[in-house]
Image 1 (cartoon, helix red, strand yellow):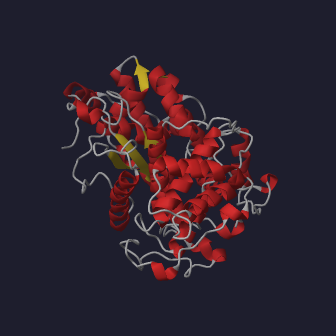
Image 2 (cartoon, one colour):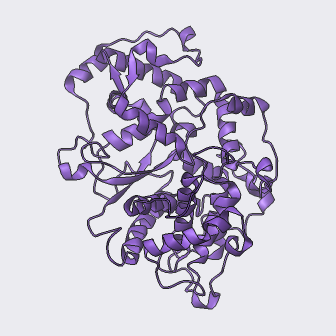
Image 3 (cartoon, rainbow, N blue to C red):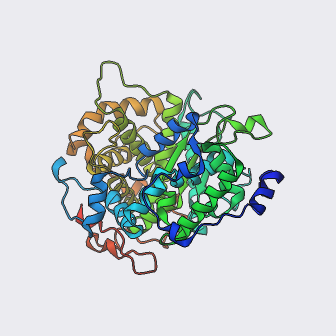
Length: 460
C-alpha cells in the first residue's frame, strides 16, 4: 500500500503556493537551508556524515574537486606509485559534476539533497515482504532478478559457513533495497524525508523547500535520473526504533538491517563496461560489511593499522571475491571473476594520507583476487567459517598493501573440477565477457545518448 503523509500535511501541500521567480532559480553555492529555517537534527548529522565515507559516496566539494571539474577531459595517468594514482570512479564522478556545473553540485551536497533518497529508503519506505516488490527495482528486470537471486544465495552461503551460528542465524533478515532519484518528485516521499533530517519552524517551510528541491533537480542533466542523486551503496545496521523500519506499527520490523544500492552506482558500472558481474561484486561487498558488523570487527591484538577503514574495505572486497568465486556461492567462471576484480580496481581511491582512505585501485583489486583465490580447490576447505576467513585475511593483509604478487595473483580452480553453468548469471550471454571486450575499447559503453563511459585501459 502506498504510504501517505498526514491529511493535515496534504492540505498544506495542496494550499501552500510557492512563488519562485525564474531568475531566483539560478543555482549558486549558498546554503539554502537558512532560507527555509531548517537545521540538521543532531541525531542525524553524524549518520549523514558517515555516508560520505563509502567508496561510492558523493565527492565532498573542495578546491581540489573544483579544479578537477574545471580541467575538462579525463587525466590519463598510469597506476604504479601513489604519486601516479588515479581513480576511475573519481574521474567518472567528476565528469558528471562537470555536466551539471560545480556550483549546482555544491548546492545539492551542502543542502543534503543528494542524501534524501537514502533517508527515504532507510527511514520512510515501507518494504514489502514480497520478493517481487515493484519498489525494489535495479535498472532493469534482468538485473533486478539477478541481484535478488544473489542476495538469497549470499544469505544461504554464509549461514551454512557459520558453523556455530554465531554470525548469521536463522532469524537474521538482511533486506535488499534499491534507491531512486524519482522519490524527489513525490511530496509523499520527499516531505517526510526532509522532516526526518531537519528541525523546522513551520511545515510550510518544509513544503517550500521540497518545491525548491524539485526545481533544482528538474534542471539537472537527466533530471530525477541524474546518477549523482543516488551515487551510493550502503550496508545499514539498524537500531531498535530508529532503523529501516523506524516508526513501523510492528516493532519487530524496526530492527532489520539492509543493503541499499543506488541507481547511480549501477549506471557507473554499466558506463564502465562492468555491468555483468560488477553489480554482484558491489552487493557481495556490502554483504561483507554485514558479516563485519556481526563479528564486531576490531583491530587484531598486537597490530597498529594506520587505516582501519582501509582494512575493513579491503576485507569486504575479499569476502565478496570469495563468495562470488566459490562453488557453493555464486560459482563464477574466470571471465566473470575478471570483471569483478576490475570493479574492485575501479572503486579504489588515492587518498592514502586520509584517515578514511579505502585502498588504492591496485589494493582493492588485489584483495578481491585474494578472496577469489581462497575458493580454488587447491587452497580451500569446503567453506571457511567467517571467523577463520577474517584470520586468514589479516595474515595476508600486509602483503596486499605491498601488492605482493603472491597474494595478488588469481589461483585458478582446475577447470575439470567445475560444472559449467551451475550458478553463473541467470541472464548469461546478455552481458559482454572479457573475451568480448578489449581492454582498450571499454570506453565504448554509453548510456544510449552517445556519452562515453570510463576507459579502464587508461588505468590498468
